[in-house]
Length: 336
Image (tube, rainbow, N blue to C red; front, side, top):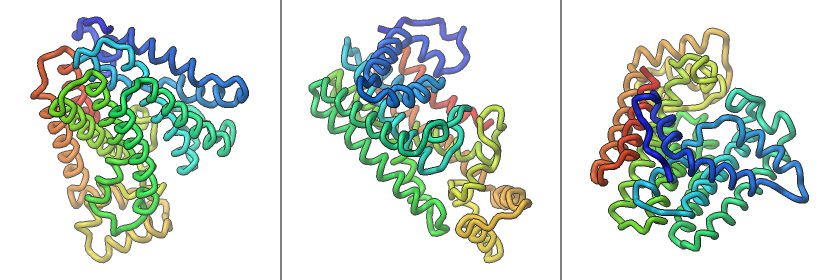
Protein backbone atom coordinates (compact mmCIF):
# COMPACT_ATOMS: atom_id res chain seq x y z
CA UNK A 1 0.00 0.00 0.00
CA UNK A 2 1.06 3.61 -0.46
CA UNK A 3 2.86 5.55 2.21
CA UNK A 4 1.98 9.09 3.24
CA UNK A 5 4.69 11.45 2.00
CA UNK A 6 5.46 14.99 3.08
CA UNK A 7 3.54 16.68 0.27
CA UNK A 8 5.34 19.98 0.79
CA UNK A 9 8.59 18.42 -0.46
CA UNK A 10 7.11 17.49 -3.86
CA UNK A 11 5.79 20.28 -6.05
CA UNK A 12 3.61 18.61 -8.70
CA UNK A 13 0.43 16.72 -7.72
CA UNK A 14 1.07 13.80 -10.10
CA UNK A 15 4.56 13.42 -8.58
CA UNK A 16 3.02 13.43 -5.09
CA UNK A 17 0.57 10.76 -6.24
CA UNK A 18 3.43 8.70 -7.69
CA UNK A 19 5.38 8.95 -4.41
CA UNK A 20 2.34 7.99 -2.31
CA UNK A 21 1.51 5.07 -4.63
CA UNK A 22 5.14 4.03 -5.25
CA UNK A 23 4.79 0.47 -3.95
CA UNK A 24 1.66 -0.26 -5.99
CA UNK A 25 3.18 1.38 -9.08
CA UNK A 26 6.16 -0.96 -8.80
CA UNK A 27 3.68 -3.84 -8.82
CA UNK A 28 1.94 -2.40 -11.89
CA UNK A 29 5.24 -1.96 -13.75
CA UNK A 30 6.31 -5.51 -12.91
CA UNK A 31 2.97 -6.88 -14.14
CA UNK A 32 3.18 -4.83 -17.35
CA UNK A 33 6.68 -6.16 -18.08
CA UNK A 34 5.55 -9.70 -17.36
CA UNK A 35 2.45 -9.52 -19.56
CA UNK A 36 4.02 -7.78 -22.54
CA UNK A 37 6.49 -10.64 -22.92
CA UNK A 38 5.91 -12.98 -25.86
CA UNK A 39 7.59 -16.34 -26.31
CA UNK A 40 6.90 -16.52 -30.05
CA UNK A 41 6.98 -12.90 -31.26
CA UNK A 42 9.94 -10.87 -29.92
CA UNK A 43 8.74 -7.83 -31.88
CA UNK A 44 5.93 -7.45 -29.31
CA UNK A 45 8.09 -6.67 -26.26
CA UNK A 46 10.43 -4.57 -28.45
CA UNK A 47 7.61 -2.27 -29.57
CA UNK A 48 5.75 -2.13 -26.26
CA UNK A 49 8.89 -1.55 -24.24
CA UNK A 50 9.79 1.40 -26.46
CA UNK A 51 6.48 3.06 -25.58
CA UNK A 52 5.85 1.80 -22.04
CA UNK A 53 9.36 2.71 -20.86
CA UNK A 54 9.30 6.12 -22.61
CA UNK A 55 8.74 8.03 -19.40
CA UNK A 56 4.99 8.61 -19.51
CA UNK A 57 3.47 9.82 -16.25
CA UNK A 58 1.36 6.66 -15.72
CA UNK A 59 -1.46 9.07 -14.88
CA UNK A 60 -4.33 6.74 -15.80
CA UNK A 61 -3.13 3.70 -13.81
CA UNK A 62 -2.39 6.04 -10.89
CA UNK A 63 -6.06 7.12 -10.96
CA UNK A 64 -7.11 3.47 -10.55
CA UNK A 65 -4.65 2.85 -7.71
CA UNK A 66 -5.65 6.10 -5.97
CA UNK A 67 -9.36 5.40 -6.34
CA UNK A 68 -9.05 1.85 -4.95
CA UNK A 69 -6.86 2.91 -2.01
CA UNK A 70 -9.09 5.88 -1.23
CA UNK A 71 -12.01 3.41 -1.05
CA UNK A 72 -10.10 1.17 1.38
CA UNK A 73 -9.47 -1.73 -1.03
CA UNK A 74 -6.78 -4.06 0.40
CA UNK A 75 -5.77 -5.60 -2.94
CA UNK A 76 -4.54 -7.32 -4.99
CA UNK A 77 -6.64 -6.69 -8.10
CA UNK A 78 -6.28 -2.90 -8.22
CA UNK A 79 -2.78 -3.61 -9.62
CA UNK A 80 -4.28 -5.77 -12.40
CA UNK A 81 -6.80 -3.04 -13.20
CA UNK A 82 -4.15 -0.32 -13.27
CA UNK A 83 -2.06 -2.43 -15.68
CA UNK A 84 -5.18 -3.03 -17.77
CA UNK A 85 -5.79 0.72 -18.02
CA UNK A 86 -2.16 1.32 -19.09
CA UNK A 87 -2.36 -1.44 -21.71
CA UNK A 88 -5.54 0.05 -23.18
CA UNK A 89 -3.91 3.49 -23.21
CA UNK A 90 -0.70 2.19 -24.84
CA UNK A 91 -2.68 0.25 -27.47
CA UNK A 92 -4.61 3.38 -28.43
CA UNK A 93 -1.34 5.38 -28.68
CA UNK A 94 0.14 2.79 -31.05
CA UNK A 95 -2.97 2.95 -33.23
CA UNK A 96 -3.22 6.76 -33.01
CA UNK A 97 0.33 7.26 -34.24
CA UNK A 98 -0.44 5.18 -37.33
CA UNK A 99 -3.70 7.03 -38.01
CA UNK A 100 -2.09 10.45 -37.44
CA UNK A 101 1.13 9.47 -39.26
CA UNK A 102 3.00 10.81 -36.22
CA UNK A 103 6.81 10.84 -36.09
CA UNK A 104 7.24 11.67 -32.41
CA UNK A 105 5.68 10.57 -29.12
CA UNK A 106 6.92 11.72 -25.66
CA UNK A 107 9.96 13.31 -27.32
CA UNK A 108 11.03 10.05 -29.01
CA UNK A 109 10.46 8.57 -32.50
CA UNK A 110 7.14 6.70 -32.67
CA UNK A 111 6.99 2.93 -32.96
CA UNK A 112 5.55 3.12 -36.47
CA UNK A 113 8.58 5.20 -37.52
CA UNK A 114 11.13 2.88 -35.87
CA UNK A 115 9.47 -0.31 -37.06
CA UNK A 116 6.46 0.04 -39.37
CA UNK A 117 2.69 0.59 -39.37
CA UNK A 118 1.94 -3.14 -39.46
CA UNK A 119 3.93 -3.75 -36.27
CA UNK A 120 2.24 -0.84 -34.48
CA UNK A 121 -1.28 -1.98 -35.39
CA UNK A 122 -0.70 -5.64 -34.58
CA UNK A 123 1.13 -4.97 -31.29
CA UNK A 124 -1.68 -2.55 -30.35
CA UNK A 125 -4.14 -5.39 -31.00
CA UNK A 126 -2.03 -7.69 -28.80
CA UNK A 127 -2.11 -5.17 -25.93
CA UNK A 128 -5.89 -4.84 -26.20
CA UNK A 129 -6.15 -8.64 -25.96
CA UNK A 130 -3.79 -8.66 -22.98
CA UNK A 131 -5.89 -5.98 -21.27
CA UNK A 132 -8.98 -8.17 -21.54
CA UNK A 133 -7.09 -11.14 -20.09
CA UNK A 134 -6.06 -8.99 -17.11
CA UNK A 135 -9.63 -7.75 -16.59
CA UNK A 136 -11.07 -11.25 -16.44
CA UNK A 137 -8.58 -12.27 -13.74
CA UNK A 138 -10.40 -10.01 -11.28
CA UNK A 139 -13.50 -12.20 -11.61
CA UNK A 140 -15.65 -9.07 -11.45
CA UNK A 141 -18.25 -8.66 -14.21
CA UNK A 142 -18.87 -4.99 -13.41
CA UNK A 143 -15.18 -4.21 -13.91
CA UNK A 144 -15.23 -6.12 -17.21
CA UNK A 145 -18.29 -4.17 -18.37
CA UNK A 146 -16.83 -0.75 -17.43
CA UNK A 147 -13.46 -1.28 -19.09
CA UNK A 148 -14.82 -3.01 -22.20
CA UNK A 149 -17.37 -0.18 -22.59
CA UNK A 150 -14.49 2.31 -22.28
CA UNK A 151 -12.48 0.49 -24.97
CA UNK A 152 -15.46 0.65 -27.35
CA UNK A 153 -16.08 4.33 -26.53
CA UNK A 154 -12.43 5.18 -27.23
CA UNK A 155 -12.56 3.52 -30.65
CA UNK A 156 -15.87 5.26 -31.41
CA UNK A 157 -14.39 8.63 -30.40
CA UNK A 158 -11.39 8.13 -32.69
CA UNK A 159 -13.63 7.32 -35.67
CA UNK A 160 -15.86 10.32 -34.90
CA UNK A 161 -12.80 12.56 -34.68
CA UNK A 162 -11.59 11.33 -38.07
CA UNK A 163 -14.82 12.51 -39.72
CA UNK A 164 -15.35 15.66 -37.61
CA UNK A 165 -11.81 17.07 -37.34
CA UNK A 166 -11.82 18.83 -40.73
CA UNK A 167 -15.51 19.68 -41.00
CA UNK A 168 -16.48 23.28 -40.12
CA UNK A 169 -19.95 22.01 -39.22
CA UNK A 170 -18.39 20.39 -36.13
CA UNK A 171 -19.78 22.22 -33.09
CA UNK A 172 -18.94 22.18 -29.40
CA UNK A 173 -21.34 19.30 -28.68
CA UNK A 174 -19.62 17.08 -31.26
CA UNK A 175 -16.21 18.17 -29.97
CA UNK A 176 -17.25 17.17 -26.44
CA UNK A 177 -18.44 13.80 -27.72
CA UNK A 178 -15.03 13.23 -29.38
CA UNK A 179 -13.15 14.26 -26.21
CA UNK A 180 -15.34 12.07 -24.01
CA UNK A 181 -14.45 9.21 -26.31
CA UNK A 182 -10.78 9.58 -27.02
CA UNK A 183 -9.63 10.99 -23.65
CA UNK A 184 -12.20 11.14 -20.86
CA UNK A 185 -13.58 7.59 -21.25
CA UNK A 186 -10.39 6.01 -19.94
CA UNK A 187 -10.00 8.58 -17.12
CA UNK A 188 -13.55 7.94 -15.90
CA UNK A 189 -13.26 4.15 -16.24
CA UNK A 190 -9.89 4.19 -14.44
CA UNK A 191 -11.48 5.98 -11.49
CA UNK A 192 -14.75 4.03 -11.46
CA UNK A 193 -13.19 0.53 -11.43
CA UNK A 194 -11.19 1.45 -8.32
CA UNK A 195 -14.42 2.02 -6.44
CA UNK A 196 -16.15 -1.01 -7.97
CA UNK A 197 -13.35 -3.44 -7.04
CA UNK A 198 -13.54 -2.02 -3.50
CA UNK A 199 -17.26 -2.87 -3.40
CA UNK A 200 -18.43 0.73 -2.96
CA UNK A 201 -22.03 1.89 -3.41
CA UNK A 202 -23.41 3.45 -6.58
CA UNK A 203 -23.18 7.03 -5.28
CA UNK A 204 -19.45 6.65 -4.57
CA UNK A 205 -18.63 4.98 -7.89
CA UNK A 206 -20.65 7.67 -9.70
CA UNK A 207 -18.64 10.40 -7.93
CA UNK A 208 -15.41 8.68 -8.99
CA UNK A 209 -16.66 8.37 -12.58
CA UNK A 210 -17.70 12.04 -12.64
CA UNK A 211 -14.26 13.12 -11.41
CA UNK A 212 -12.48 11.11 -14.13
CA UNK A 213 -14.87 12.34 -16.83
CA UNK A 214 -14.46 16.02 -15.93
CA UNK A 215 -10.69 15.69 -15.39
CA UNK A 216 -10.27 14.01 -18.80
CA UNK A 217 -12.27 16.74 -20.54
CA UNK A 218 -10.28 19.50 -18.80
CA UNK A 219 -7.05 17.69 -19.67
CA UNK A 220 -7.89 17.52 -23.39
CA UNK A 221 -9.17 21.11 -23.60
CA UNK A 222 -5.93 22.33 -22.00
CA UNK A 223 -3.91 20.27 -24.51
CA UNK A 224 -5.84 21.86 -27.37
CA UNK A 225 -5.35 25.33 -25.90
CA UNK A 226 -1.61 24.83 -25.34
CA UNK A 227 -1.26 24.04 -29.03
CA UNK A 228 -1.99 27.71 -29.72
CA UNK A 229 -0.35 29.36 -26.73
CA UNK A 230 2.06 26.90 -25.10
CA UNK A 231 5.85 26.83 -24.95
CA UNK A 232 7.33 24.11 -27.17
CA UNK A 233 9.91 23.31 -24.50
CA UNK A 234 7.14 22.57 -22.00
CA UNK A 235 4.61 20.83 -24.27
CA UNK A 236 6.94 18.86 -26.56
CA UNK A 237 4.87 20.15 -29.49
CA UNK A 238 5.34 23.08 -31.83
CA UNK A 239 2.83 25.91 -31.51
CA UNK A 240 0.23 25.45 -34.24
CA UNK A 241 0.74 21.71 -34.84
CA UNK A 242 -3.02 21.13 -34.65
CA UNK A 243 -3.59 23.93 -37.17
CA UNK A 244 -1.01 22.48 -39.56
CA UNK A 245 -2.58 19.04 -39.14
CA UNK A 246 -6.01 20.61 -39.85
CA UNK A 247 -7.52 19.56 -36.51
CA UNK A 248 -10.68 21.43 -35.59
CA UNK A 249 -10.19 21.84 -31.84
CA UNK A 250 -12.20 23.91 -29.35
CA UNK A 251 -10.46 27.30 -29.84
CA UNK A 252 -11.06 27.13 -33.61
CA UNK A 253 -14.63 25.85 -33.19
CA UNK A 254 -15.35 28.90 -31.02
CA UNK A 255 -13.74 31.28 -33.54
CA UNK A 256 -15.59 29.69 -36.48
CA UNK A 257 -18.91 30.10 -34.65
CA UNK A 258 -18.30 33.87 -34.43
CA UNK A 259 -16.71 34.35 -37.85
CA UNK A 260 -17.95 36.54 -40.70
CA UNK A 261 -18.05 35.21 -44.27
CA UNK A 262 -14.46 36.26 -45.03
CA UNK A 263 -13.12 34.61 -41.86
CA UNK A 264 -15.16 31.47 -42.52
CA UNK A 265 -13.66 31.27 -46.01
CA UNK A 266 -10.17 31.40 -44.39
CA UNK A 267 -11.01 28.52 -42.03
CA UNK A 268 -12.54 26.55 -44.91
CA UNK A 269 -9.40 26.99 -47.04
CA UNK A 270 -6.93 26.14 -44.26
CA UNK A 271 -8.78 23.46 -42.27
CA UNK A 272 -11.28 21.84 -44.64
CA UNK A 273 -9.25 22.07 -47.86
CA UNK A 274 -5.76 22.07 -46.32
CA UNK A 275 -4.50 24.90 -48.54
CA UNK A 276 -2.14 26.59 -46.09
CA UNK A 277 0.37 29.39 -46.69
CA UNK A 278 3.27 30.63 -44.55
CA UNK A 279 1.37 33.46 -42.87
CA UNK A 280 -1.81 31.48 -42.19
CA UNK A 281 -0.93 30.41 -38.63
CA UNK A 282 -0.37 34.04 -37.61
CA UNK A 283 -3.70 35.00 -39.16
CA UNK A 284 -5.41 32.09 -37.38
CA UNK A 285 -3.95 33.26 -34.06
CA UNK A 286 -5.14 36.84 -34.72
CA UNK A 287 -8.69 35.54 -35.35
CA UNK A 288 -8.60 33.45 -32.16
CA UNK A 289 -7.58 36.57 -30.20
CA UNK A 290 -10.08 38.80 -32.00
CA UNK A 291 -13.02 36.61 -30.95
CA UNK A 292 -11.69 35.84 -27.45
CA UNK A 293 -11.64 32.13 -28.37
CA UNK A 294 -8.56 31.33 -26.30
CA UNK A 295 -9.95 32.99 -23.16
CA UNK A 296 -13.32 31.28 -23.64
CA UNK A 297 -11.58 27.90 -24.06
CA UNK A 298 -9.55 28.53 -20.90
CA UNK A 299 -12.76 29.33 -19.00
CA UNK A 300 -14.25 26.02 -20.19
CA UNK A 301 -11.18 24.10 -18.99
CA UNK A 302 -11.37 25.75 -15.56
CA UNK A 303 -15.09 24.96 -15.40
CA UNK A 304 -14.45 21.25 -16.03
CA UNK A 305 -11.61 21.20 -13.47
CA UNK A 306 -13.96 22.73 -10.89
CA UNK A 307 -16.56 20.09 -11.76
CA UNK A 308 -13.93 17.39 -11.17
CA UNK A 309 -13.09 18.84 -7.76
CA UNK A 310 -16.72 19.17 -6.69
CA UNK A 311 -17.33 15.50 -7.66
CA UNK A 312 -14.94 14.41 -4.91
CA UNK A 313 -16.39 16.77 -2.29
CA UNK A 314 -18.93 14.15 -1.17
CA UNK A 315 -16.26 11.51 -0.46
CA UNK A 316 -14.64 11.02 2.99
CA UNK A 317 -11.49 12.99 3.80
CA UNK A 318 -8.33 11.24 2.58
CA UNK A 319 -4.79 12.30 1.58
CA UNK A 320 -5.40 10.84 -1.87
CA UNK A 321 -8.64 12.78 -2.28
CA UNK A 322 -6.71 15.99 -1.59
CA UNK A 323 -4.04 15.02 -4.13
CA UNK A 324 -6.68 14.31 -6.78
CA UNK A 325 -8.28 17.71 -6.09
CA UNK A 326 -4.84 19.33 -6.47
CA UNK A 327 -4.34 17.37 -9.70
CA UNK A 328 -7.48 18.96 -11.20
CA UNK A 329 -6.08 22.41 -10.35
CA UNK A 330 -2.69 21.50 -11.79
CA UNK A 331 -4.20 20.41 -15.12
CA UNK A 332 -5.49 23.93 -15.72
CA UNK A 333 -2.52 25.70 -14.12
CA UNK A 334 -0.52 24.56 -17.17
CA UNK A 335 -2.23 27.29 -19.21
CA UNK A 336 -1.18 30.19 -16.97
